[in-house]
Image 1 (cartoon, one colour):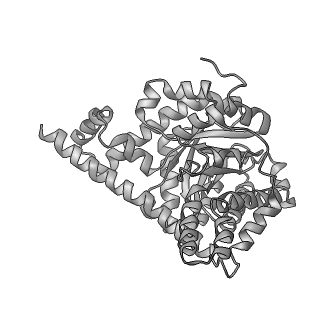
Image 2 (cartoon, helix red, strand yellow):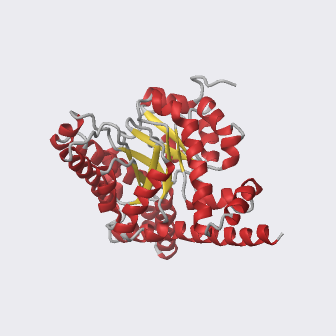
Image 3 (spheres, one colour):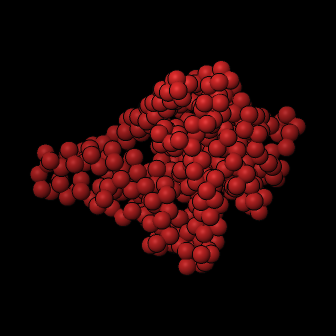
Length: 383
């Protein structure tokens, strides 16, 4: 099977200027040739990974046993074994995607890896780990993921200054996105002041979607259970609407920032746009379309990173269109209506909780994976 224009993913990329990346990685899909096939047949132009993905890939998978045993015999710590496995997967994925990186002049073809989530609130550790990961992996098309926390943003700035590609992750609020974009710009400005090339650095800002609706919808359901009929309708109208409205507003901010005079000065020196990346795009609620976080947010200079099942759903029945600029006024109204006394949802608090929960959702599988590896080392070395 070869890619054709009938594939909606290729339409999204070729007609509407949005790149499609995959939120999944394992040694199996790289070495079986499946990843290469996905780039050719599904139009996948990049890969994102996180501790949850690696836990699923490594725990209980015999593919890694030989390397785990070898690392153990060399006297490596569990942490060092984990890194050797993951770095190897990232390198191989980078090599698979390198032709895309070259064809797109460094716009696409990236593979993202996250610094340990346990250091999300430690600026200096994040900087040193980002630097170490980037050097150890040694590929031009690797992106280091740094959480968009208040402690993470100075690390983003410094990493960009040092020429490290950065994927800023766990962005929920529009304000946190705006701060992220300016951190990227400051990093480029400082690198330019250092007399260094800024044309070969890439960054994306990963803006999360479905988790927002899951949380807000739950709050709306709780309020509907206690509300009278007239208020219930008002609450019901907001269900499944907040994440997409929030993303559309973030895109408006993206356009303002990257048309500013400050940005244009950097652009003259070859700076690459920091694209908005839609993350958490698998629909969690079965009542909603399984491609709603794709169809509604197709837009130029953006990326949608999808789990494999969403990629397949999209290839089957996405309906591409340039919708990110549609109903923008309505998006602002939706966000404003959360302040209505009958609704009374504090979005700032919701976003803050989502960030804390997001870090925790990466810490747990990371620690669980290290624990699984520890057990596996004991098993393999006791035989």
